[in-house]
Amino acid sequence: MTCNGCGTVAQARGGNSEDPLCAKCTNPDPDFWGRCPVCETTWQLSPRACQRCVLDQRIRDLLGNDTGTIGPELVPFHEALTSAERPDIALAWISRPKVQDLLERIGRDERRVTHDILDDLPSGKVVAHLRSVLVATGALMPRDERLVALEKWITETVQARTDLTARRILHGYAVWHHLRRLRRRIGDQHTTQLQDVNVRCHVTAADNFLTWLAAEGFSLGTCTQADLERWMTDPASTYREESGHFVRWSVEHRHAHGLTFGTIRWTGPQGTIDSEKRWADARRLLNDDTLPTVDRVAGLLLILYAQKIATIGQLTIDDVNITGETVAITFGTSPVVLPMPLATLVRGLVANRRGKAKIGTPDNAPWLFPGGQPGRPLSDSQIGLRLHKIGIRPQQDRSTALFTLSAELPAAILARMLGVHIKVAVQWQQASAGDWAAYAAEVSQRPVRTDQHPASNT
Image: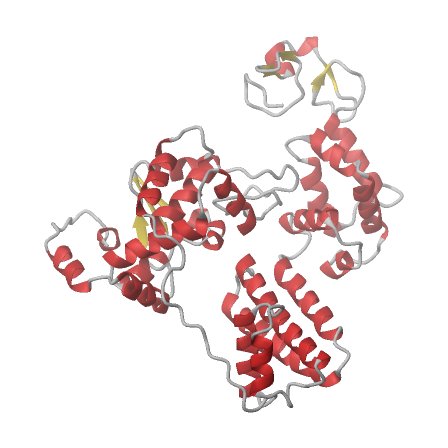
């Protein structure tokens, strides 16, 4: 519990359930209390070891050798567990049978702990959480887990094909086209959920089409346009647009001949553009103090600045610049000065941001929206679920925001301010029939402030 007197996290020794007090706040007389026989620091009435010392010994039993010595590569992990803010939660976690088994395996293994060693263990939430703690504490190097899982899935999907020619074609499409392009696109960043889903849909579409061809007694090389159109009209056909991409790729790489599959051009937002709902949601998020600050800020960044959920989740405190009363945030290349009261909400989020991870959370975690795993931000799916619960529809509300902003700003400024690709900005401006001339005329009439950064005027 958190002491209502001094704010420290310790066992309750006085007060009540609503206002608990630690030992020192209950009775500041040091002679009144006994001491933990192990650390001789914790004030308590019991002659037994305190929870933190019990936790330390339990971890040494699991990770250490016969003398309780822990290998140097596991020292940061050990320190992170024993220094957990809530030792009772850490004790409960390591007392789970699956966790005990995993920690004992790691302790008995004489090899240095690596991702490959953890990959050999039975997969599941326990291993995933253990891995995140090891990464957050520095015992393991960070790794793009979503990309690793995607690579494993692609390997299994390709190997499941019995025909060697079809397997070679699917391997080229999945690995040399999609994975290579994905790695080039993400660079040093981690794969987002949408990127993962996009690749899986395209590979699944290709695999389904190859399966249909085999069932019909054809191959990709012998498939005719009539066969392709017969498949296109089959009600059981799925991922039709993604299948078209595979067909065009196959023709380009000479795996298929004489096949055409037209592309579907983006002609504008498909959902409803509801500006009234957008502003009603914005007013509610700005003024409803009963909603969590995390949800209010995430929702406002989406509604007002058309930010994707994946982008919101990857924001760090370095993207926020607080100078005096001014709060600016950078989505693209130019900082955007936030209006009140959104600036106050972001300022409070930076000061009080806190994830749900109780074990292994580093003090220097950079994320603006810390998540449930140590050292990781809220995932795309978690942010989406939280916004849905408070009545925000991310896809519709972002489309409305993009549509509105595109009608008011030139594509170049929209791309620079929001961090979207210039081609995307141009498409949205064309869809919203934005008037550049009107914008330029309006900007020319604005009073110029000499005490403000040029990007702020933008």
